[in-house]
Length: 218
Image (cartoon, rainbow, N blue to C red):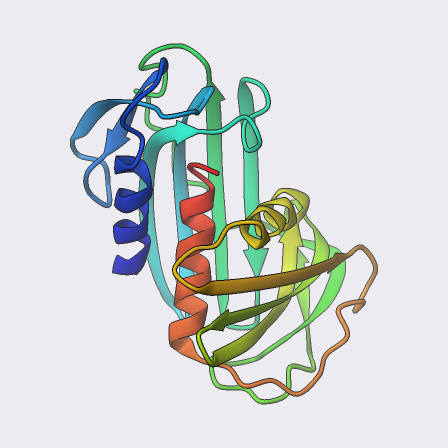
C-alpha cells in the first residue's frame, strides 16, 4: 500500500501557509514528524489505521492538518469499511491547538460482526458482485462506489460507516489527478443493488489510498 503513503505525503506537504501548526509524518509508521503550518485547516489530526486487502494487513500512523469539514470539532471518530476481500478501520482524533496531534493513537482492533448485510464482490477480479457479506462494528451503511481514472473504471460494493460514506461524498467534490468518484450509500439490508462490474486490484488500492488520504485532510 505504498500509494497510501505517497498520497498522504503529497497532500500533507501542500499545507505550507496559515495560522495553525500541526505535526506531520514522513513515513508509514510515523517514526519521525515535522511541524508544518497549515494552509486553511482549522484542526490537526492524529490517526491510526488498519487496512487488509486479500489477507495482507498493513498498519499506518497519520499525523497532519485537517479541514473543518472533516473535523468540525475536537474529538474522536472512526472510519470503517468492509468488502468481500478488503477491510479498513481508521481511528482519528481531532484537536485545534498548535502541535496538539503529537500523540499516537493505538491501532484499531478488528471489529465484531453486526446485523447489517450488504452485497459485495468476493474477489479483486469478480465480474458479478452478488455475494452478501456481514458488516462489522460501526458500519451501518451499504455502499456502491464507481471509480473512473481516464478511460478505466471499476465498481466497489460493501459495508461502510456513516463517516466513511461522508468521506466518499467529499471525494466526489475534489478533482484529484483526473479521478472521478461516484458513491451511493443506503441503510437497509442488501440495499446496494448490484450490476455487472469490471474490477481491478489497482483501482481498489487507489480508492483505499484516497480514502486514507481524505481521512487526514479535505
